[in-house]
Image (cartoon, rainbow, N blue to C red; front, side, top):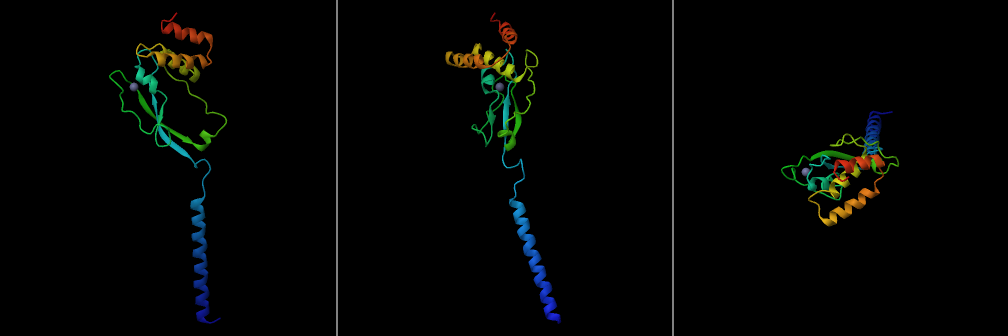
Length: 166
Ligand SMILES: [Zn+2]
């Protein structure tokens, strides 16, 4: 084997190696890691659940804002002088969105104590339904929503009592 052809072979081998490595790294870049295909990042508004909470806060409670959500722009906080709302960061990944089993829900604090999520929902709807600032249309809508939430009779009695409805 003479000097030139050995050199040529070496250059050729290096060139092949470079091309192969480049192609590999390109493919790697395209590969999507499981669980990372979709991630929607935004913020969720959380209002304190209680009889002193302003209506505007209760109505915005639980709303999600961000590029991936229907509402793009979050309202400026505080809503008003009595507002104690906060934003909580939310990240929804594809396995959250498409998963059949919902993530375990953490209890929510309120002026009635710590509530399960369904109880918290019921309580919020009742707070809105009986809010002194709520108009006829809003009352009707939320009374209807409250009726659809499945809570124990003892809990709904406790809420009514708390709201001085019974
Ligand atoms: Zn607020």
